[in-house]
Image 1 (spheres, rainbow, N blue to C red):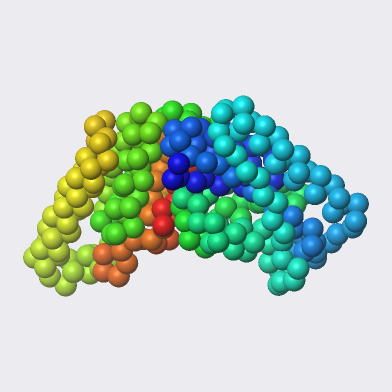
Image 2 (image 1 turned 90 degrees about the vertical axis):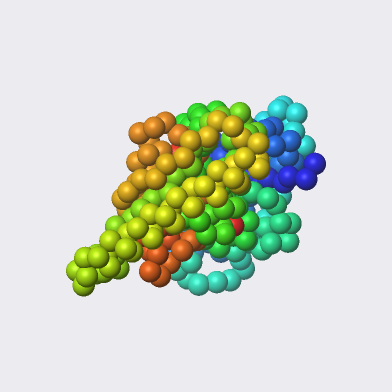
Length: 300
C-alpha cells in the first residue's frame, strides 16, 4: 500500500463531508487513511485570543469525538486508519486567525502523505480552527496535493482538469487521469485562452503582428491538449474528451464544472505567467477554490 491520504476534521458537517470523501478515495486508491485534528486552544480563539479552561476542555472533547467518529466510519469501510491530534502554536501573531495551518503543514512535511483532504470551511465559532481560510492557506502552503471538498457532491461524478502545458499542469493531468481511472468515471481536459492585454497591444501596434501572435498561441494550445491526451493514455483512461475554451480562467473553469455536472476539478498550484498570462496562472487555483461549486484538487 503506497498511497497515503490525510483528512482534516474538526467535527463540523463540512469536515465530516471531507472525511467521507477521503474514505471514498481511500477505497478507490487502496490507500491508508490518517485523520488529523488540531488543538488550537493554546492560541485562544478569535482575533483577541479569548480562551477559558472550560472552553478549552470543550474544544478538546469535540476534536476527540470527531476523530473517534471518523475512525469508526473508516474502519466500517474496511480501511486501515490512524488518528492524530496535533497541537497548535504556543505563540504567534495576534492576527493570525488560522493557527491550525502551521502545525498541519509541519506534520505534513514530516509524514509526506500523497493527499490532504479538507472541508471548504469548519466551525464558525472556532475562528482559529479548520475554517475556510485554512483550506485556502493549506492549498497555497502545503507541499503535497490538497483536495478542498464541497458538500453534497456526487462522488462518482466526472472529472475536469485544466492545463496550460506547464510541468505542474501536466502533473494535474496525471492526477486527474488516475482519479478518473480509479473511480471509473469520464475525464475532460480543457485549456483556457484568457483574453490577453499583451496580445491586444500587439494588435493595436500592428494588426499582422497581433494575428501572428494569436496563431502562435493557438498552435501552442493545440500542443498542450495533444500532450495532455498522451499523458492520459499513459494512465490507461479511455473515456476522455478534450477541448479549448475562451474566457477568464477561474470563472470559466468554475462555470463549466457547474453547468456540465462535474464532481471534481483538478488544477495545478501554479502555471505560466508573463507574456503567456492568457493561460493558467498560479492564482487560478486560489480563485478556483472560492469560485468552484465542486471539489477542487490542487496539485503540487
